Image: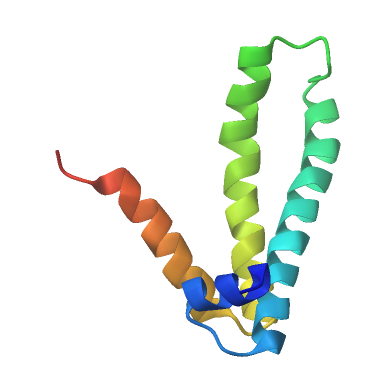
Length: 99
């Protein structure tokens, strides 16, 4: 079984076209998040000389939410809202587990 067939099985999809759209959304989301970082970090004075802990903290505070916003935008634009909203719901539910 190929890698793509395993992905389709894991995600519960049957169409190659739908798999292509989902992978395209992940790609566009990642590229957009990187472009936002390239724009925002220099405006904040963040560069390679910035402390690592501060760089990571700002990444988590600024870029991670932007990533999810881009994911929502692209998933709606390409008609895969249900898939990505389900995936995000599953991801965020991991943070809310009762001990």
